Image 1: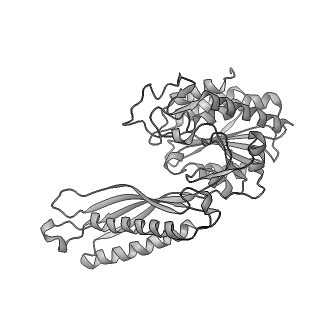
Image 2 (image 1 turned 90 degrees about the horizontal axis):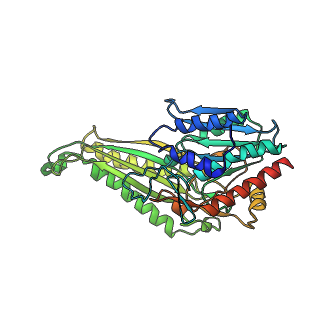
Length: 386
């Protein structure tokens, strides 16, 4: 197969409408074919339905001490956004490459794939491993099964670089957390007889107020030096969606809401889950006192381990040397980096592009950032070949 430039690969990746709600298999098929064209075998890890897949591959000898380049293949929707060009066609204007996922994070994926033939020609002495996941945008859902299989089947890498957009600056820590689907089941009556029914919306509001109270409590309490590295420097609880009810004069039979925790290092997601469970039990008891048919169900949609800064970590050491940066920062969003670190890998986040462009209409990565990412890959391959 012809060796493609990072830009040519990015153009192809952007053309796949791999929104999280849809299958990513057409993109995975293309990547697998591209790797096979260079004599590299890839392995898939499917979701339970077989409609999506992670993909991982290795270039180089079966020895420990290599580097993993990890990215996700899914993107957020373009629905309702105003784009000045086709979001599924990579378009250059003024030194910027526009397209959905160009920044978050098909730009890095393109660089990682372009590094494969480079690593082959360089004859790397330590392996380059590629890891591409599905459903990162909805809670890093795909990554755990891929990370577990890589840890079992591949030689242990000395470092994992997760290429979320960071302007090619090392990010050594991020918050962890979980996403919860909450279903409040009420008892419908005419609203004039409110006291005889249970409004699912009113009861859900009690859980939202709990979230507000905990946010205020966290904001006011003393902070550690590590917490102060984050913005904001406290654990947050957020309700992103809510829906329910059928009419203005009927107590709502159902209310659904999504709640998410973003937890700072030094605190535990499990503690917040326990506190929520206690509040749910209190609210539910009051509901059942009116009618036993009422209740609340909480289901975990995803869990993302936090990424802890590593004292003397190999991933930070490698990335700082390759970028020339003297320090590493932290961010408040989550990535699959937490899953890799949770499995014992030294892990860092570093990728091209500005996170401010992620999920936006007219999302773009600058040509300069893509070039900086390619220079990084060339130096990395040189290090693996040394």
